[in-house]
Length: 386
Ligand SMILES: *Cc1c(COP(=O)(O)O)cnc(C)c1O
Image (tube, rainbow, N blue to C red; front, side, top):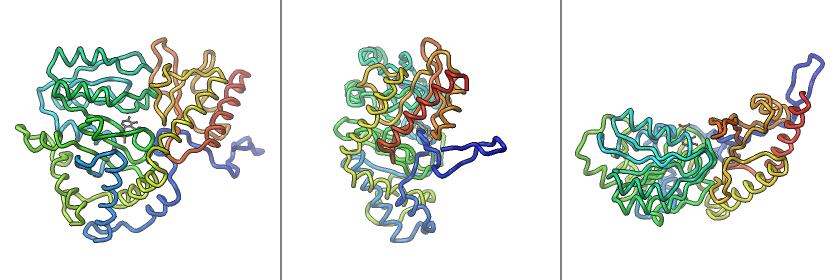
């Protein structure tokens, strides 16, 4: 909460602001404890054992026994580019199934790296049109289909099982940007037939930023091994990491680049927390909190961008700024109520502005209620011109 002192300057009182953001998100105390430990040397047997546990927990969280897993330094965007450079052959087209701005990023990364990209777009807030995916795959031979699991610019969740099935029918690989989904959405990497799943540490996993988190199918691993082209990157190539990760899982030391060791130890703890809560229980908690938020927003007459409830992501919500209110004024009024929500990154098909909530990771019903109360008060203030 904030208070006003005599000088008119707003000052923090005891309750710190609540950040309902997409990331980095609030970290659990046990994760913060891990982050405060000295960085272990990369050859330290205790560290290698912890890194191995981290990788095994990752397998369990994404649902793979047959694939390869990797945790390497980087951001989500670096991860997307690493995947493109490591697995995609320049000159061969890819299909980008768009549900928002993260598809634009996939496309831009591909185009910059001489990989032709065809984007299948939908109106903001709409899920992919599977019929058009079928049609596109029938018309052109694509080497891969690229999609975001949960797009944080629209709040749309894509049906990965259906998209991966279609990719496979046409012998295309399926690469998923799950940066804002892992830890909040169901992922069944093996069962759904995904080829690459990219996760991020600092969104629904509520861990330290600075890591790329990967699962790769046997098909994807084979594709890297059998590359007939030389990737135009050294540092971002995922291929040299795979034997290092396999060695780490066996408890042996191997080196390609220095691991982000503090972040790895913190991630291991975050993944332990996911498994301790239970994979399904965690997904259910996020879905419940999303529904609670959406019911509250409906009561305030605030429109959620994604119309169809089945297409709504569990951890992020994009809303339309109500008519007659300036986005900037609304964000400030809500912040004055002690809750941070974020500006939207897109306008609707009708030209309306949007704003966003993250509700992922370390979050509960009280947080959602506090956010709703702040939005309610913020809207009243804006309407009263205060
Ligand atoms: C945040 C995000 C990214 C990018 O992650 P950075 O670490 O900021 O580069 C990619 N995809 C999605 C869906 C995201 O939400």
